[in-house]
Image (cartoon, rainbow, N blue to C red; front, side, top):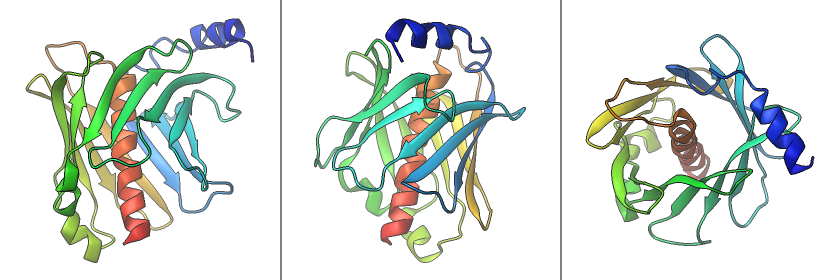
Length: 204
């Protein structure tokens, strides 16, 4: 789809779609041609659709507003193939403008997943951290995960896994903060955490 039509389709999206206080991230247990993630608003509207291919050397994920994958909103792109501190840039899929980044902290995943949150100028402005021990969850596969996101010294989001047998479900709560936090960026950060959680379970 041409860029001007994509821009028109994005402008036609409900203005409150990315201004909600709560979202739900769902990954079905089975999906063809890669892992699929859907992000819904609390009232059941689709906010993002993400398909992660099974065979791709370098992660480059597009977050679409529709399941037909015609309205790209964000892109999550790894800066390098292999790195001790893997950095995931969150970009506007149409303009390429960087909203921010999340960067892993070395070997912290051995105890609990931890990321630095970076602003568009690559300055550390917060953290995203797992609140349950990764080591424990390697042995107790069904133990629900929990993460929190802090930006500017304030708690801005909670990511809490809900126990389900046939799918992965995470509730994302965006908390009121004195600073203006883009919900799209926080959702992208949460998806990075969810995908890390799913990958660890698959490799465990």
